[in-house]
Image (cartoon, rainbow over all chains, first blue to last red):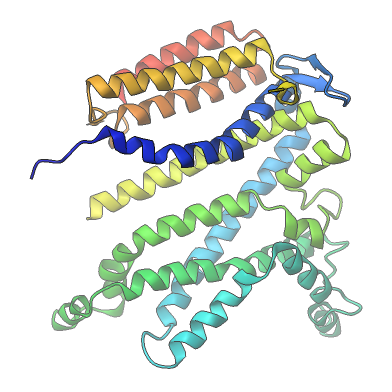
Length: 289
Length: 93
């Protein structure tokens, strides 16, 4: 059948284009303008050229925060994706338990970021928190305020608690869309549990997994509120991720030029990583289809 | 309308002007040769000319950053390198 081309349909995109221009493009242009200037307020700007970018690219503080971010995202993806798939596979497909599981899974997603941070800040405290107090009673040296390792564990476990549900719900949606005939055919062929997962369930889940990996990568790479509330970037700078550093620079120090340069580099890294993830996963899918 | 809060400068305006012209040019190209001319190139997966422009712009940004970090503030040679890189992307990717 001949496909109908009607370019007038592009006008339907105009409202979205205007909305994106106001909410994203114009602020981004402003950030670019700020990144090549210096200001002391009152809308007075001084030309700085590429100075802030050079300063940033020679700053150990920036590389430290970047490495922390990369390690955090890698750990989060390595835990949340397999765990999410595992939980989704274990969830019931019919009966009264389905809504119970779905609602239970969705609960952490409904809690605002700063509330999650506050919950875990209290939960992990050695003096009044259930987790901190219990671990201390068991003789485990856990103090996220002083020990960098404990701080990292807290931030990672908190993120896993908050966001694994998203991976679970997406995988579950992928799993329930698989027709029963696929499983029947596998049973007739005498396929093992692993073969069913590897050749039926995983390929059928790859589209939702792509979304899950992209969302979790972007979210974890841009994490701010939870570690800010729980550890404040400490002890020392051990949980200071790029977003926390950026806010310190922009609002704490009012260094708008350097902060704008850092946010642009941050944005470019996120854009590159997302493109790589998206390309690899969509092409992997096409080979399999 | 007052746009002074956006802190415009000549060079940044020129930069966005060029990006806008590139997008406009891509629109005109698409009008005369619709379909995006998809092909499988060096990266072994299908790219359209929009993908190739995206790769050129993103790669150019990283080339300029690398130049600033490793060489110095004079970006004219980095610009030449970006143009060569973009030409290679449009030819072989």
